[in-house]
Length: 291
Ligand code: PAF
Image 1 (tube, rainbow, N blue to C red):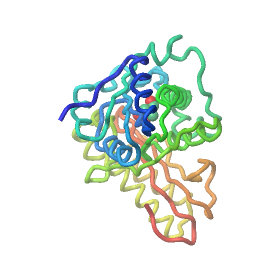
Image 2 (cartoon, rainbow, N blue to C red):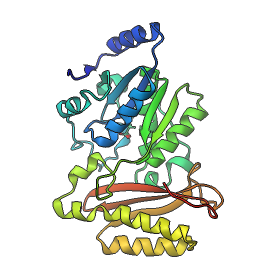
Image 3 (cartoon, helix red, strand yellow):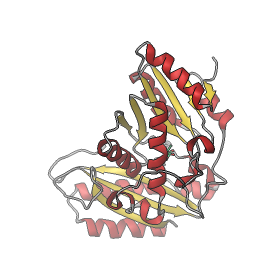
Image 4 (cartoon, helix red, strand yellow):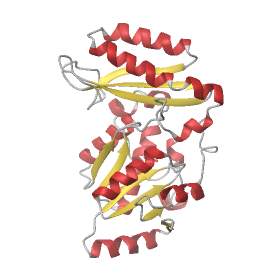
């Protein structure tokens, strides 16, 4: 089987899209920064089941990294990614240059300013400007590809909600499809950053998911959130995590939780210099079941 074709020239992308569109074919986009894992491949398979042609974008977006973050060392693994995508249902890899994405330079020119109540909380608190960078690059990708559907993982839950709100607020004609987090067998959410963990940290890392699951069970049993949060934070600290936040939010708005509505429990914590995030659904009080 042949790997998908890699396109970096916007004119070539436009030609390909025109050919597909002229025969009425639908197009799906899976935006990524590469270093693909099973989580990404699940998105690609879901896309292939929903649309005629699947484009995977691979672009390590400089504007979503802070000055002291891992932009320079973020894994760039195109050959490996192409091997992974072979036979996955991906037709084309869109791998634009920085100059294509940001003709005036990264952080220059037009961009999306995410409302503070969505973008400055949770991960946005520790990573100022991160979600402006994410939204700005995703909007550019949507404009370049014009997908009928775009596919995102729930692992980056705040990112997912911000993109959904952007699509709604700016009346973008793309349907966002969210897929559940894909986990290693020990529960660790798959992430390109897991590769930064040394073997000791890797053994500790699944505890993040375990503590989240325990917190959800306690909430389901009717325990008070403040008590659950205190216990969860203590357990994570004991296991060596440096916690940025352990927060319970409204699953739709990310605002403070209303126990009568679906909620989301989100965590971000560092093991050494590696920042891990995860989240789980919390059902409204008085209902049963988790996802
Ligand atoms: O989730 C990611 O990999 C990135 O944030 C995204 C959506 C591709 C934008 O750069």
